[in-house]
Image (cartoon, rainbow, N blue to C red; front, side, top):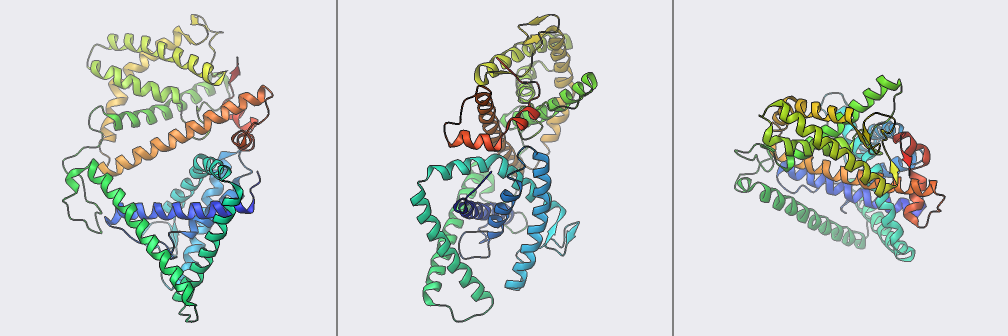
Length: 438
């Protein structure tokens, strides 16, 4: 895959700004106030910008090997965080972050937890957000983009000069530079405070009792009193049921195929992540529909699961065939099947799984989820939702384009060209080895 210099400059400023926003939001939760993060006067965290540019350059040609991409992201996260931490300390004479109190740290500039978190975030960003950023770049007219990038580069150069001159105590800096830097500082504070206000408003709307608590550096916004996260059968609980079911379902199918066929193959519904959407939705629907009869006779639960599971699997098969023009499973070779979409054996399995789920697994999982911190649980839940929606969009578009390629249709627009570069046939066939065309 090839990116032009202008694209890399665009990526740098976008990720530097988004990284700074992320730092402000994290600091808001941690300290309960606006913390003006970043080395420069402008609202940019340059280590995020440079970091993502380097990562994009290094992993863009490994699109058929997501695991290699992830490992590369972890290594680059370590290298860049340590290097930028040491460099900023040398330039400014102080640390901008310090991991000295964390386990497995290296000179306080980085630690194992930060490497895993940063590397994972970088990989997820490249997989799920970067394709949309490429599309956004393609939608902006080239002449307008050229002007925007030139202005941003000039402001960035002035900002870097003034910042270095200030920390190194250089005095020969033109007054114009200082005025530009002041304007960038004012803009940074304004954007940061508005971001903090948005976070505060959302927190207080979700947890009104926290509005009157005294904020502190230790507890940030404080703690939601007399609250249990995802108490009972609610939306947040069903989201976690979906993720747990999707992961366990993918794992069960992988082990089943390994035992029966002696072959280790992907059973995931998505290009990125070991999740089975069919199992995830099935677990959420089963929980919602079987919850009212969870204390009833197991025979009744088995019958409900037998029928609901069969109808659900048949419906999913029809949906994927109509939408994507492909078949992800086919039971035509098995006895007592209905149009190859579902069979008696698997309906029995759905019934038995319903008893196991609602009587044993769901209560354990439910109690575990309810122990999560209320605010953190809410934030992580919505982060999961956003990532899953993006993953579904990316996977759906990639499968659609794969189908078009098999029908020998040329790429008609930039999105399809991007799919041809990012999601090649060997990647799709590795993730969906049993996919067939109708």
